[in-house]
Image (tube, rainbow, N blue to C red; front, side, top):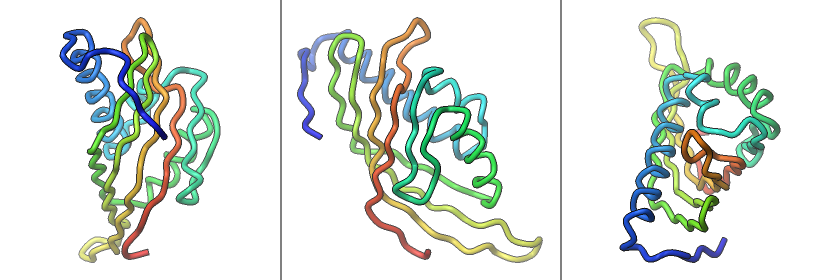
Length: 150
């Protein structure tokens, strides 16, 4: 995905948009790790499409993906999404984001036992739109790169 910058990176409105987009990505990671599906829904537009199929997950609309995440994330006692190396291109009220993720996860285990760990790495590719409530993702495609422990 080629990214270009439409506005000067010293433009104050550009810098504010960049910070708001970074905050959106942070809220996304926190919502998934906390299994807070109401907060997760607020990241996306109501007509968003989300595609986790590269790692064997669901692809579909917001309701379908929240149902999938509710069930699949219940298998894990812990996860910690880290999102970094954000490439952001903003064009007025739309933006594209390609950001790396590192996601260690631990399977739930009986009390007194430690669940197995595994880690995923890849990229989140978002298409964002500016709304009355701030930036929201209208499309997310997860791109798999590697895993360890699976």
